[in-house]
Amino acid sequence: MTFSHTTNASGNVEGKREDLDGVGVDDNTLKTVSDIQEHRQQLMSEGCRKFSNIVNRTTRARYEMYYDDHLDYIYCLVSKASCTSWKGTLMMLNDNGDLSKFRRPEKLPWFMIHQPRTSDKYVERLEKVPPAYRYLRFKDNRYFTFMFVREPLERLVSAYRDKLVEHDYQHLDVTIVRRYKSHEYNASVTRYNVTFAEFVRYVLDEHAAGRVLDRHWIPQNELCRVCQLRWDFIGHHETLHKDADYVVSKLKSRIMDVGQRGRVANITFPADSGRRKSSEFLQQMYASVPAAHVKALYRLYADEYALFGFKHPTVSGFNSSVPTRKPTVNDVS
Image (cartoon, rainbow, N blue to C red; front, side, top):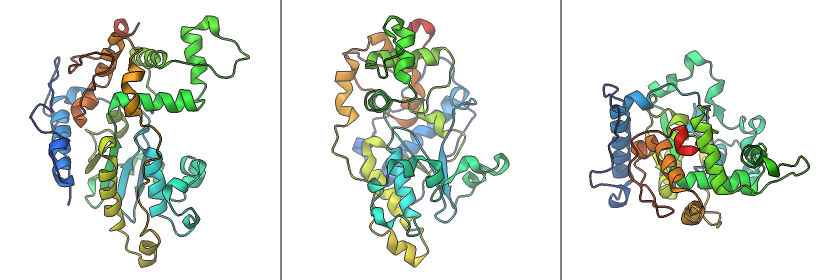
């Protein structure tokens, strides 16, 4: 089964956006992987055609893509869309025996997955390919290209929990406190309690100021350049395991070496960790976010909703509709 995505850049739409998912069909009404992928590809192709003046613009976002010339794949890593699990799985599938002691992707140490000096031994980074040759593999239909994306508001909650609650990410808490609550700043304090509403305000202000957003909350279509590059498979976090099982099976089928195929025969995409999912926190987290900021988030991530067919969740009692423009400074002050 092969899926392909082509871009028709002749469309040019300004002003009001349409809801591309208003055709009475969604993933929940489709049964097979093939049907679901066809629907997702249709949405993305239509979005790329109708909104070409927006989604084909040059992006300054730093991307993270991986490829393998034996299994012939390219994977676009999207932060907060099970990227750690995916990178660990790809490492295990390419293992020559060094990783066998870990047995399963979820057993790999965090540093082995996220530090290039170790992960580069098992997965190749596309950014290391000379620019003149970097995208040639996308033109070769032998390569299976795939990415996984996530509903934007849920992804933002996941980023907050990971980077501000559970970990100290680039001293982001200090940055937010010094910007919005400077009277509370104390150089001797090592960690601050930053609320989700404050984090949302920070994200919106960064965008309004024209800065490139962090890869953990930047629009996902910018990371994967979805209208410039060919993507065969679009996985959704909401159907993660069904989609992941298909991709892992497809990659395994491409292993020619008998010994290698035997080593990875039992490798599967990691099961749920058992932790509460960020989707379960949506109402709770957005309850403290002003409705104007929720509306501004919908506008910030409008491209994603159109291209990937995500449903707009109702949060904080705010009845969302498809946005018609991007947020301005007045939206997020």
